[in-house]
Length: 144
Image (tube, rainbow, N blue to C red; front, side, top):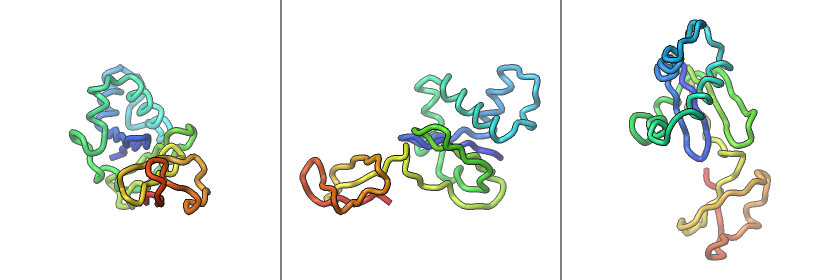
């Protein structure tokens, strides 16, 4: 099964079954099984762009039906074309590793050492020790 994982500030999973249902509903002449991984990514983006808020909710990891287990498998394609998203096509029927934990939106998440505040830094190579928490002025750590 080929699931498409889109990393944004939230992680969306569009299962092969959902994508196929959307494809069939819109009456395409091309057989779903013949779609390339690139075409699956394009279809997944279209599904998300046309979804209502309540429809989006079903694709969010940890809400409703989607779980992190659906991000484990053989990585077939990575798409970094957009600055604010990272997309993976993962075949969950083939053993492999878990979807990568990425610096979402090409931003590094930084947490206050006290744990009560987080913020994001665009410069991924920044010296974290030079930063202080904007809320309390204390030490910060990179979220791993």
